Image (cartoon, rainbow, N blue to C red; front, side, top):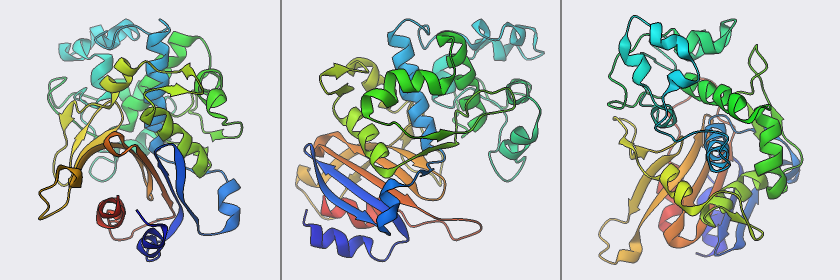
Length: 311
């Protein structure tokens, strides 16, 4: 992996930043402007993967129960719902977005915009009917991320951001951040977090290091592995699979027989081109941040087309 090749590879893209950590050291660093390194910027749905990490930490501390625990333990009212399947939804199904809610994030029902315009986001999500049996189908749904954030508040007895400061941000050296809240003051579980590119790199590196940071085990390897393993395959046109608020996939060079030319990876993905890729087999973390806005053509998968071949 030559820096000159990477510089040429990223040049055509509207990147804010590209950071690559390889075998424990910063191997490549690119910023569109020098000020970008110090600026907080929206990471959008990469927030979901941060929430997943916080959920794992809370489970290990005994503040939240086993992932097979029913959602109804936190919201007993769903046991009275006309659809008895709601009472069968588990925490793991929320984490893997297989709860079965009838939801179209954007387009169609515009479920996400409607939720954010409602007076109570949790009520809005819980009132949605089910279109699938829990556990059978993945439907991308930022509403279940908000449910998870609210459950985290119940379990820890503190705001999501406060728990993050104590158990994740503090150890990773993340001293500055911004995080949006819903009308009830619950920090947004599916979006709304602002971090610096280097913060994202530290977050990815934590996972690459099996949850260990500076001789402190923030997440045990077993639970970290479970949270990043594919639970369900994604429907076309999405590729790969979905874990606990992480995407999963693999890469193989065409016409290459060497096993070194193939690798598995998991990644956080946010609207507008925000990515954190963790590639355990190559001991590599890649962070990409961009500025896509509005109605544009679907962004090119820059990682697979221009960076993965160089790794």
